[in-house]
Image 1 (spheres, rainbow, N blue to C red):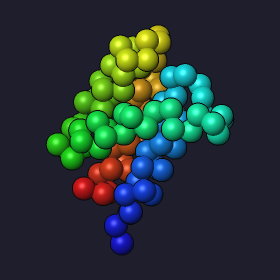
Image 2: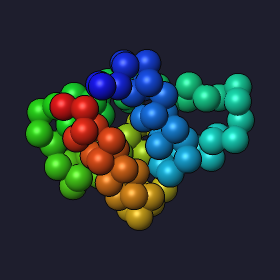
Image 3: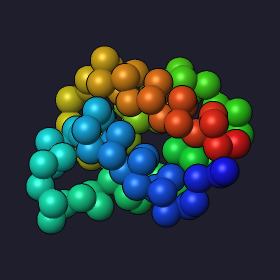
Length: 91
């Protein structure tokens, strides 16, 4: 049974908050939607056959250019791997 869109968004949100989390807001319930604006880009990249490296690059660019924090390649890669695993099952 395919995952519902709201379930998919919730799972992506959890990955972004628990693994990627450049602003360290993961434990703050009031900031749960902090990274939601990036979810459509992530889903689109996977649907367009983006690789883990593509996702890592996107997350790195968001981290350093959009959010303006220091690079953390290991966290970007870990999140990219989990996002790819999650979304590859859904496409």
